[in-house]
Amino acid sequence: MGTPYDVTEQVGHLLRRVYQRHLAIFQENVQDPSITSVQFVTLCVLRDRGPSSQTELVRATAIDQGTIRGIIDRLTARDLISVSRDDQDGRKVIMALTPAAHALLGDLIPSAARISDLTMEGLNPAERVAFLYLLRRLLETGTGARDDEAGQEGN
Image 1 (tube, rainbow, N blue to C red):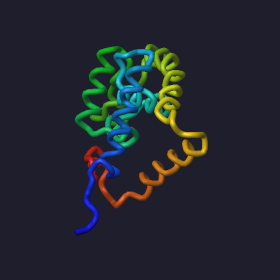
Image 2 (image 1 turned 90 degrees about the vertical axis):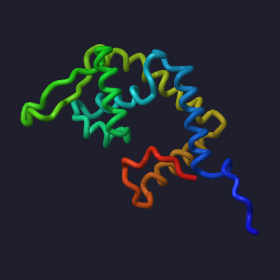
Image 3 (image 1 turned 180 degrees about the horizontal axis):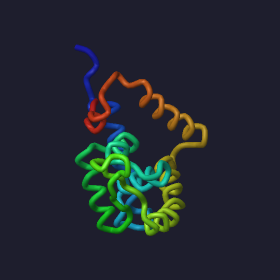
Image 4 (image 1 turned 180 degrees about the vertical axis):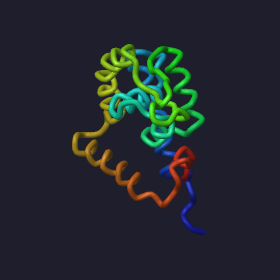
């Protein structure tokens, strides 16, 4: 019999645990506790890319269609994003940041940098660079899995 399979030592399990830790740090340290990490990412993408369709948000955030729709609804209800029809294609809906969202992001960005630091707190500067490099490499060298399967955990 070979080496026993210990699920707690597998990459999927370890990544999920690190992500859970990061989410807890986010909620403890974000300036506005009513903002979730996925809402924050969505706001940052709209800040960086400008007005975007739902499909563009899905691609840029790696958040699935159903989840992004709920995020859009919640951010719209808080007057953080506006929703309008595309000038060229009236069927296409475009999301954009409101002035309130720009102000909120101005408050959140400093705490976001601290959240990243706290997530990697146990790593020295070289390990932090290596860790981020390896995460990006894993994303670049996928096995051909479709983006919409990104939310499924593998061990």
